[in-house]
Image (tube, rainbow, N blue to C red; front, side, top):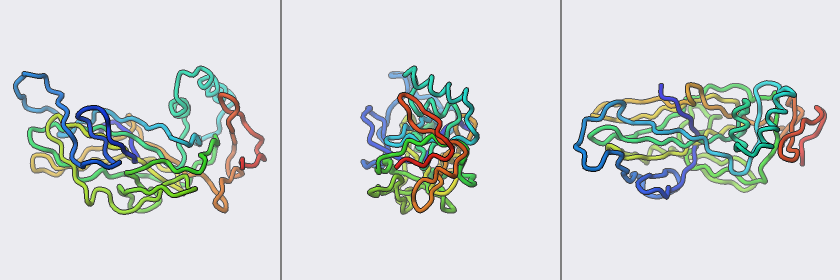
Length: 273
């Protein structure tokens, strides 16, 4: 299994030869050659598609996280020490201590063709395992009413979930997903051509662990490859709500921003307005 993460947004890359898919532009990627100039062609070795890298995408306007278990005083102190050091991003800090993103989680997946003939990508499927949302420790730093920009998204609340297009809705922190993204789009990669997908997993109801499966046709054969998060599944959790608003009473612990870090609130504390 190839280790890597995912969920769905995209933009047009500025680097020569690298195509960023999902925010418009032509569907066919522009080639970038990784072969040594002047050297003769050699037979490609390995999988028909290389996974060059998988990169978690920082949240644009929401830094709310939920932990699967209660956070000890020592762990909270360590989290705040990391924030005070200004050496890591919020995402890196919260992930490293076990935090799970709320609502939507996005990954960039860079793929490269590795066959003499074109390899055709037919789908990037998601394989979720879901249950009730996490409710142990809430770190609440909500967005200001603007949805995350998502272009290729997976609605984990529907069964089956598949790649869809998204629409930003006013005053809704999560995008609306519609259609079937890959039904009308197919991508081909020549040898050494690269393409980057931004994939987002979205949920309003569940906690989900998931991986991706890249489906393709190479040398006339239908094949696939799995992508995960360095041997582990990706994660995203819904927030517990009541009457459309965050229900802080559902959580064992509540933390809110305090200076360059977080402060634990009394269990009876209401959610911020």
